[in-house]
Image (cartoon, rainbow, N blue to C red):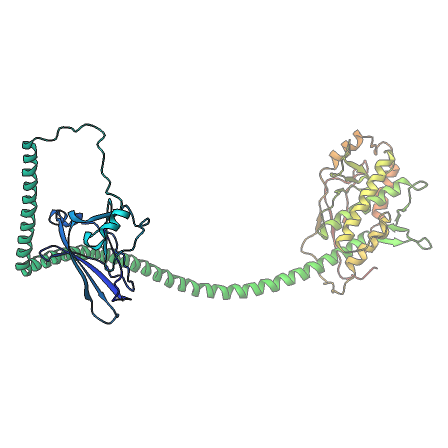
Length: 509
């Protein structure tokens, strides 16, 4: 239902309008909202289904409209109408196509099937002219038989029973509310008691939960105490160990200082001893310059030319190369240099091993030219010079030409023995032993298998001359020198022993 109001001439402007619907017994069942600042208010639609049959079955009602001129003033009754719903005048489905003006303070009621108003407020002539007749449903079929009187009576009785049940329900609800209001204090106490019981249960649950948590915390506390006690014991043990370690550290520092001093002294002694040994090597294998022949030297009074040995005595060259091979072999030990091409010192039958190159046949190359392919002798000379170059590079010496065998060796000995370190005048505790390589026999066998024939070309006189050259070429400062030479001209597997005389040490360079 919707109520529409039209302005009144006495009130040109309203600060607020309200609508009220009451029964004939003056019991209000609906009060509308306030429509502010309007002279033609339209109220919101509303439904009366929730009010029950006592309201929905009414055929008459009272409409009251209140209004006020100012916002601060009170509401005053503007219209009061007592209408019968069966006497309302139908004016159309909607007001959009309505062509005449409503009178002042006219109330228009909008129901589900159209718009209605009070008949006394409209002119009958205008109604006949402008108002369309109320639509009626045309029967499209013949009238059917309705319910019997007994059925209608039963429905009426059922409806009355329903009304009685609803009235009984309302009466019981009223009694319950009255009982509840009369016993409100006891009910409030019971409700409070229930609430307190619930709170007590919750508190007990919280207490049990907190007790469990407290037990867990106590266990954790005990665990932490044990851990702390263990850590304290470990800390105490660590403090004791640290104190002991401090004592050991002090002793170790003293020992370290002593060991450092001893190591320095040992290094200095080793350097001095190495210098002494190298100095004696220069005396054992003296390399002397030939006067008026530049870059020509002799080793143990045996001339070793730098050019190819054509026109020279091959036995002398082989003996000189044997001295050079043995000197290089000894220098590699005392200078702590691992030769890339190992040398097998065997006097005039010395050889050089090439374990690096990709070659076929024997890897042992002879350092003598008689009775062997010349290219193998040349390659042995090349490997020997490469070993000398390696020794010189270890001492940071500059190599100008690796073919200068004795000059490079002379320069190397000069660099290694030229130092301001004083030479200690003492004798070694035991003789110096020079081990001879045990692979000599196998190397000779391999050399003979590849065309190296040394023994067949050498005569007994050559062997004797090599032995005499070996004995004559030793320096005079060397004493107790002994070497065992086999009948075929090679050095045996015994050792060469010598003792050095430090009393007549001087720089021979």
